[in-house]
Amino acid sequence: MSVAAQPLRPPSRTLMFLEGRALPELGAFLGALPLLGLAPHGDGHPVLVLPGLVASDVSTRPLRAFLRTRGYAVSGWRQGRNLGLRPGVQHAMVDLVHELSDTHGRKISLVGWSLGGLYARQLAKMMPERVRQVITLGSPFASNPKATNAWRVYEMASGRRADEEDTRFGGTLSGAPPVPTTAIFSRTDGVCAWQGCREQSSHMAESIEVESSHCGMGHHPAAVYAVAERLAQKEGEWAPFDRSGWRSLVYPDPHR
Image (cartoon, rainbow, N blue to C red; front, top):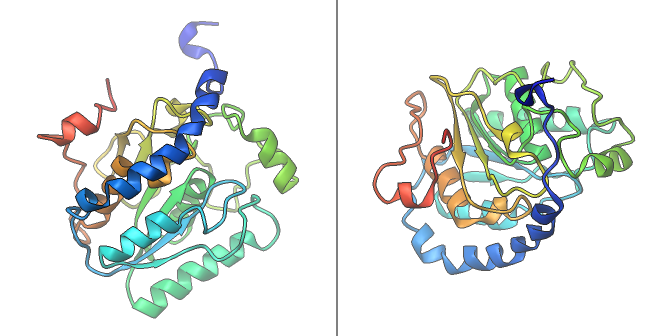
């Protein structure tokens, strides 16, 4: 078997150990709030933020609070801890997308962290008429489920095999949603192999690289700014992220 054909492996133990950066990254987020205040304001459309594995809306509170300051109608997923696709989870998410889009009379944006990003992509495939765009944070949609250091946790929490794909929930994971999609990833992710968290570039899909941990990506200043900047685009006028100027110092070239 050639090197190119080798399956992706989970991140190294060293990177997993470095996930302890998540707490200092939260401190960096709080310290960067004055600068993050320069991020563009949005148009008030609804945004649903989905947490990662075994996390709850508490984990996304800093991101959601910041997005509210940018003018969005932000909601958590309202289902307690994310323990995988257990009975009722999919239907509750579908109902929430309907509720938010009906209440505001507009399409909603979906922001998902890790496993939450997989949900976001599948929801957009099921209901593209209700979804404005998808943004994922360290979500391993393009790799084998076992190319992570969390697959055993997923199996214990959900009672399902990590490689058990439910095609009734939006089809295959790797296929891009039919809406503008941004995949934010980090090469120093200690939980998910970063290669599986990148999107194939197209006229409606892109990847943005940040230098963060997996567990801190949802409040890492660079990731938070990128989320806010992507959400601020006018509906129907999506364009790839512009890395020119000062941004080239913060956001590495994802294709290097």
